[in-house]
Figure 1: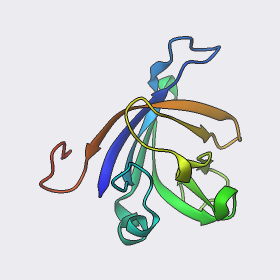
Figure 2: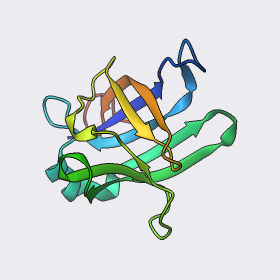
Figure 3: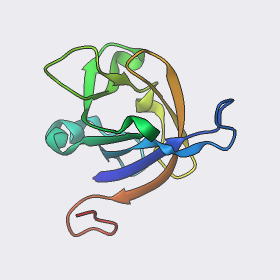
Figure 4: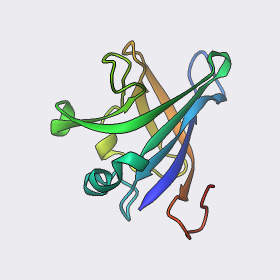
Length: 134
């Protein structure tokens, strides 16, 4: 089932309390345990969208993609322009992480710099389900 997952920048040296001004809202397919569901992604990839907000840099819109290679044989990535290589942001072992409130995930920016994010909310995105966004 598709879910809206909101990520905020976690605590770091630069942001000792973390920051809600940096993060993502991602529409992702999750299984019953909160892990990314590759089979559902294959069926609904056109609905797996990413909204990145980054303080004063403005917002970016992209899509969640699954590419061969990387740890575990594949890498989940955020692609902002599928016609232009090099603007992707790779998730670090996202296939192993549980997307549940309070959990942490790491995403590398398009320069390869890793940032850790905390999952601050997970809500159902399917039509007619609780927490649906319109």
